[in-house]
Length: 409
Image 1 (cartoon, rainbow, N blue to C red):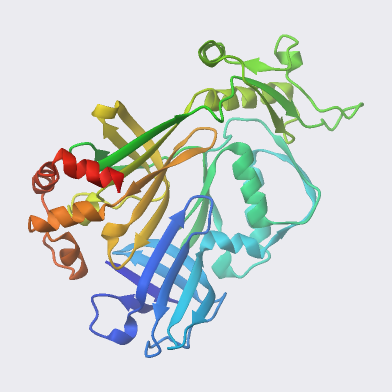
Image 2: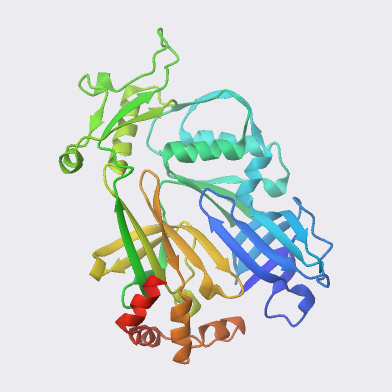
């Protein structure tokens, strides 16, 4: 059951009889490399109607004992009846409150991130400060050269780093502290599996070669000791060739040449390593999925909720699919979590063509018709859950015509 707090004081809990501590239509969005958002409506008789301050009040959301959102109010809007729509941004947005001055740094990426966070912390209040958490992007490369010639918001600089190093940022709370992680791949697997014949209802698969690259021409930065101010290439460490190709992909798709710029790399061997990783990540076809599924944590107590940044296994043998995907975005209807939307992407060089997983209202109606009252049990906080075999039985009763109808809707 979701709860919302403002500066540590409860402002929403559906289990309370006190209507002055409830908000309407709370909707939560969590996303990688983005602040995320929370929106809700307050009636004039809410106990905190006039007590919330924009930009300074800290809003937190808990799912049971687990913190799933921390941020601040950025705007509110009142209608004719004085109902107030409040919009909050997640704590990743705090990085928009600080500036990085022009600089040149030569260091490893993890050290550079620590410097960026320390610079941010020196400019903002304690409530908006961070610790560096896990950094798995580029964790084996040597020192890099980072140069910024202009004043830039910290949030914009982090976006540039995510794009350049093909990773993603995520924030979390631990023991009262806020942490920033920069990950090349997920280090956490969800306890849930989305599987054909269990909780998967609809699947649509698209294969695209639009971003395909089988040959890359990498160009690095200018070394500090350079006499001619020329950008480095990989020729000296790649048999006098300034390009790199993946022969297996060339044989399958032909030569598709791309140019890639790494201004912060000033050593040919490190540039070659970066190009190899880039080519491995981009020398295949993009596969995108759209699936509809049921979040089993709503109906079965042994499962945990799917979280942003987790790897989720999606299995559909009729579609020759058995692969892990990273959850990149979750949109939570906090009144009716069966309407929650999930986006998934594979993580290689980048987040490839997001995959959408939607909790199907059609399936929910089918389950309700078999007396499996998921929503009612959740909303009233009863401890009655659906067993896995009951859920499978309800889904299996759907005819092929029913499934076709769902897929077409």
